[in-house]
Amino acid sequence: MDKQKWKVKNIMTEYLVKKFVKDYQNTEDAQVRTRYGILSSCVGILCNVLLFGTKLVIGLLMNSLAIMADALNNLSDAASSIISFVGVKMASKPADKEHPFGHGRIEYIAALIVSFLVIEVGITCFRSSFGKLFDPEPIAFEWVPFLILLLSVGVKLWMSLFNRKLGKRIDSKVMLAAAADSTGDVIVTSATLASILIGYFTSANVDAIAGLAVSLLVIWSGINIARDTLEPLIGQRPDPELYHQIQEMVESYDGIVGTHDLIIHNYGPNRSMASIHAEVPRETDIEVSHEIIDRIERDVARKLNIFLVIHMDPVEIHDEKVLAVKTKLNGVVQALDPQLSFHDFRVVNGQEQINLIFDLMIPFTYTPEEAKKVVHQVESLMKEVDSRYQCVITVDKDYLTE
Image 1 (spheres, rainbow, N blue to C red):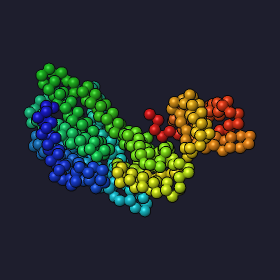
Image 2: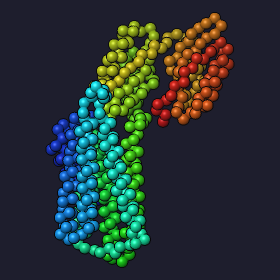
Image 3: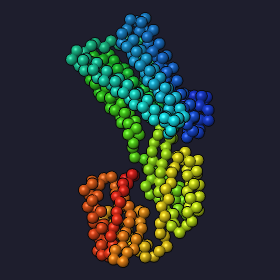
Image 4: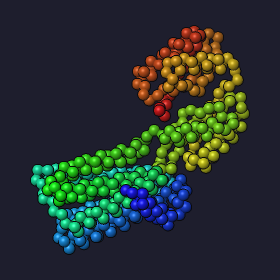
């Protein structure tokens, strides 16, 4: 696509966004996201219904089953847009008694349904192409059907670019699924056009082979959409950028020594809650630390739109003996594996035994046997440092192994 055509399509997209999406730049707002979703769905319904009507009328006038079949395909695409519309509207419903964290995940379910429709298009194309491989049909070149198919490619290509741009702008799985659906139609129809031209100029019938190749691409595209949509439903690992952003924000406040055990739960696009352990100096008055924690929670909610719950962990930062033991433990842990770390470190002194109490952070790549082995190694190595050391270790998991 040349730059001029891309500029025209981009202008059209921006015009529709500015015309129908109020406060379109505030993409973090749930209502604005809903407006984007409604615009995408309505454009999809309108374009597909127009293509369906045009192809159906011309198909009836020309008595062409191929054109009428393509018209029905556009009607099924309109159904996909309706599914997206319903999904976006239902996802925007506010929280209620039965769903205290809202209905945002419905958008993922809608995208999953669309991905199945994309796969169904690929399977249908594969069956048809496989049959033609053994019983090829002659391809006749006719200007009217050819131009209709060419028009369809242009419209579908714009719809794909339109949905992809909006989907990336607001991080919408259902819009990206709609974009992939339109892309699949572009590939299928383009392959049909290419087959017609090749057959017209060379008399070679490559329709079946091209159809098989395209159908596999479409099926693979649908599988990728389903996989990407299932991940947040199952519970994927958090976005590293967001993970570090929350950590850095919490640790930037005076009175916070460090953080650990950050867990982020996704309840739909821009609908997340999180919990984190914040380390505070043990000698600081608990009411002072509590006031700092409350302020951080409010600031994170306002700036990042995340409901954050912070657990306070008092830590020693002045006792030189405790800090010296902590330094020795850190050396032992890092020598075993730089990916290991520990937190919630405490020392409980006794007459004949000194308990070192801490949580050992182990990556998910470790098997249970490897985890037990490294725990035993830490215990043994610390006893070599001082025979009185008795490690009381709680194994913890690193939720962001990079």
